[in-house]
Amino acid sequence: MPAPASAAADPGRTVVGRDIGAEEHVVEHDGRDPAVHGAPVPEPPTVRGATALPREIGVLVGSAFAIAIGFGLVAPVLPAFARSFDVGVTAAAAVISVFAFSRLVFAPLSGTVVGRFGELRVFVAGLAVVAVTTAGLAFATAYWQLIALRLVAGVGSTMFTISAVSLLVRLSPPHLRGRATSLWATGFLLGNIAGPLLGGTLAAIDVRAPFLIYAALLVLVIVVGGPLLRRPEGPVDEAPPPRTRFRDALRHRAYRASLVGNFANGWAVFGVRIALVPLVVVEALGREDAFGGIALSVFAAGNAATLLLAGRLADRSGRRPPLIAGLAVSGASTAVLGWVLDPWAFLALSLVAGLGSGLVNPPLNAAVADVIGERARGGSVLAGFQMAADLGAIAGPLVAGALAEVWGYGPAFAVTGVLSLVAALVWWRAPETLPSRS
Image 1: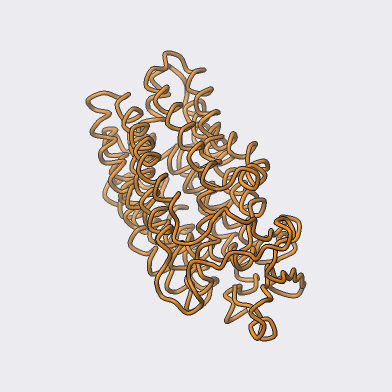
Image 2: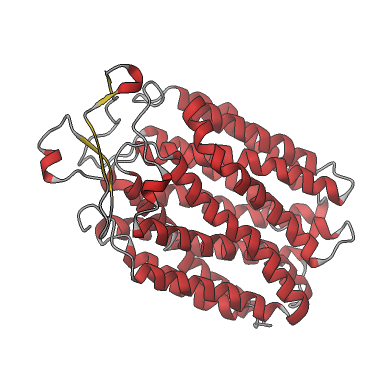
């Protein structure tokens, strides 16, 4: 985040964190890190006012695309695969929740792990863990094995997610954070467009094949992306950067609003939609499994259509306008999704929900980066932000799955939509974090 005028006049003074709103918390750094006995903090790979993002951002975006294709392959298959072990809807949804639960439990330690071993090592190790456990799913012979493998996979997922986002935040210039986070999210979403389509097709041939392909894609990211990140344009792990602590970030009203927004997003997008849409398609709409992949791809396409727009809006007009609009649109469309019985109307509402969700992610991540501060390492802040989404992803499938079993899919999706609308109201009262408008 750009420093105040007094700091900008002194190039040796860097603002690490600043509260947005009524409360004020300023941590200043004189350009030297005591952890390295006065050695100067490395200059960022880009300068203020530049329009080009660092090369590492492109590597991270490409890695996100490959990872998302693999995740998209598995998403429409996993609930149905769990049902093949003769378990109920809630147990099938629990396969999604246990992954998020594992991420949640390990998240408090993830910032410490990244700080001790560095982003790159943790990134590669996390990908390796997910690759091994995902390949193991293809050979599972019992439901408990699915649960165990997903528990371990959640640890690896947290490792590579926190390390990658930490790099993304530190290497992105403040005035390009919206663009950087939108490109990062676009990489994931474009992969999620292609992944479910291919996953549904592969499942018709062999339900275990998507797990092996996902594992192979993760290995490819390690082999190709790892060496590129080891040769950065600017220093990455050579000197420890200043840190922003979770308890300081929690004093920011904008950060608290970000936690609420990410909880609602995790509940709706990473929990209920992945866990229940494939089941709604088969059990309520009477369509084949492949149609579930189409519905998830349509949602992802809506996301991709607005992500870059959201990034530009977040950098020009502020974080709040696209956030509030996106949460309102996605919440309203999701609230009625479970009552729809026409397949084409179901796809249309999925598209609208995707368009709204796409407006949320870039400004939400950019707002958290603003709270962390320019060039600071905020592993614990990012971990807390991730935990909010994971809590939603844990509770969403379980609560919505129980509602679906007792009262049907309509109430399950209605509760999900209302949570997003509540998050929109919270952000309506939150302060702006865009440095030029805060």
